[in-house]
Length: 68
Image (tube, rainbow, N blue to C red; front, side, top):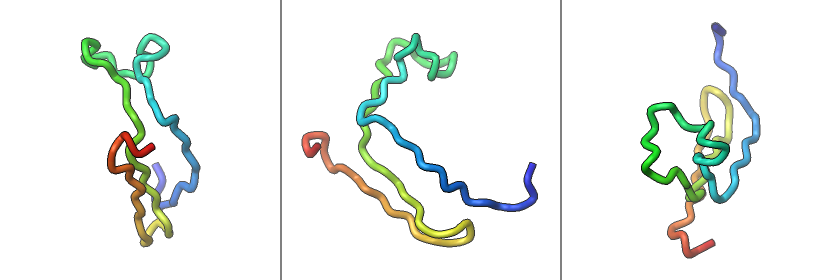
């Protein structure tokens, strides 16, 4: 375990539609309710600008799914 804090500046990309049921559900917890469809639409993105001890968060939100 590290004794200091460090900001991770990695970039992550996700598709507009995220299907966690794909690949036979390998992305799901074993106790996940399989009777429910695990399909999600990207609705918002959260960005942090700054360092580990301060900065600002920005949220980019699509108000409705019809505004694509």
